[in-house]
Length: 112
Length: 113
Image (cartoon, rainbow over all chains, first blue to last red; front, side, top):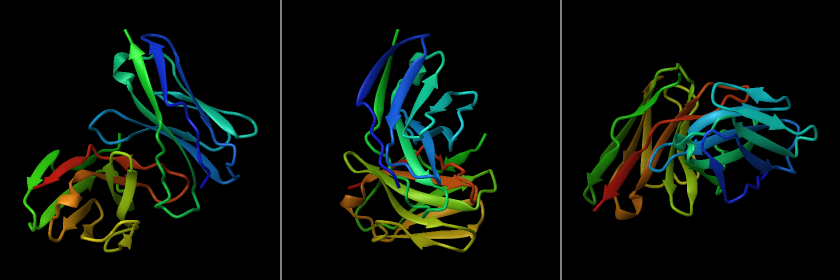
């Protein structure tokens, strides 16, 4: 599975959009991009995933570049409760089910 | 909404005790997983199950066993708890195939003294 690179930390003002980047330059054609977040002392929470097209759900939007080498998670109106570590993961759906590697992620701090 | 429920949020056990961690999911998912999460080591897979009565070892199965008698329930057993098994334990489930994501429970923080 491809490795991902994310900034260590980011700040965002409450009410503004939070844009979290992820680089996955070695992604292959059958690998999905998944985003999770983890608030301290809780289990990881699934946010969104995609293969090629941009995706949107009630929590966030996922923008994947045309070459698929990078993506951006957008939280449209960040709140204080969105403060968490955000993980970007790439994984092939045909691959072994145990290959879900959480890197160090991005600590998003939403400021009042 | 998918719900993965772990029976305990916090557990304190003594060395040598047999420990049972229970996990239930309500979405009829075929696949279920047990991970542990430790600072600096990330999530490590202990065991997973493709379906009822099926189990596969993950990356760190030593000292653990699992049971999946019903589709919705996946139990992790520490045969004889040791202090190096003090950790956050996370259960997850997913629908089989098609890139479907993992859904995690809130975790059980186990302390072995």
